[in-house]
Image (cartoon, rainbow, N blue to C red; front, side):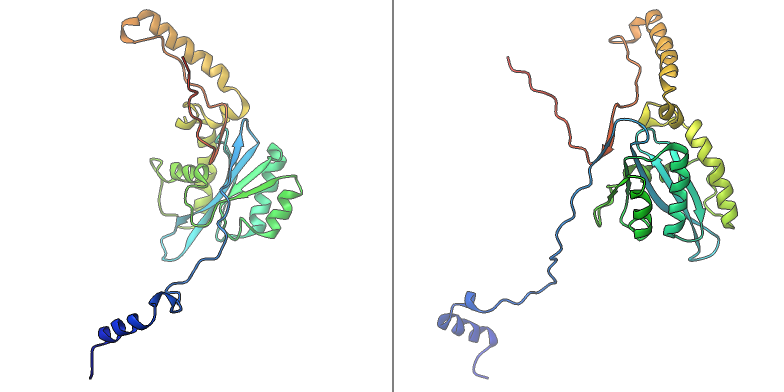
Length: 252
């Protein structure tokens, strides 16, 4: 042995610039073009629907049931649902056909990028109604917040059984849950009105009753407030990945 390997590299460095040596990639390069951010906006019901599929568990390992759900993002009303033993595009198509027959076709349907969501069969069925499709970006978890929030409400509701022995048991539970959610649940995202009240516009009459009670209470107890209170109303628009609006600057 005449010298160490490091010595030979120092000698080589004096002979030839090491920056001219060919560089070999040490990791796989991702050449895919980043997907564009989905941006959707709704100013009223039946403009944008969001849908997804979630698992509910059975007593047996690796056996789950699939809950399909379609939600109107403006009103938060569940407009379509079903419970099956598997994900399948033709089952999703049937669900949408029933929802569209009842509520009319939305302008946009947003979903993640799963096989059932991006299937040609579903795309053909929805575009036949003039619906535009929108999808999550790959590996982005917050591009479908309305459906994810809806499933969270379902699974964290008091009395949720967590385990369903059969698909029929799961269907019975969801068939009872959806009417409760649509008509009884006071949703924090829509000023504590129910989704059905926002969907059909009846929230305005309920708001008048709330506002009358709140203002009457203020008139009797003004010392408990810093200023006259306002009764919350649902937002005039909602969306996914909408640009943040900054308050206008006032110049002197």
